[in-house]
Length: 187
Image (cartoon, rainbow, N blue to C red; front, top):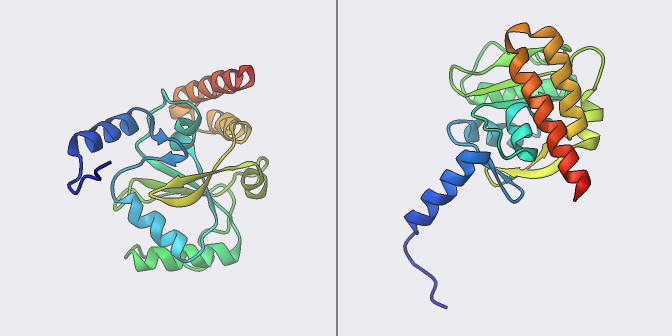
């Protein structure tokens, strides 16, 4: 078999189109844009995070499309220090070593990235619980964790009760996740 020396742009275009439809091929999550730089920097300093939100829903439910990146971060002082260091290297200022230690934070990085750093809300589930049930995946070729369906449903239910303007989106995600979970059980 002859190995092509030039990239097959038709194949790449089809892979990108498929990824855009469902954000996942095999164990690889697909996400385009500047967020790769953010994820690489967070990982280079050892930040503990789990992928949540629309991209995590898309991991389980191919019909869900996601364009942003929501990361649940461990709210410890050590992790917060690493996050602040990574963000400083990316020229995002204004964060101190303890900026990410409080529960219930939602820190959009929308100016430079299409991402949001989130700490768990008071109650459930905790970061440790989400991390313990998370599944391994790859994002930008790097190993990451994706929140489990039960954890996503629990977080979406909290979002419905606290974010009225986005409740329809979260209710749709809950219904999708329940449908995908039922399909998985039937297989």
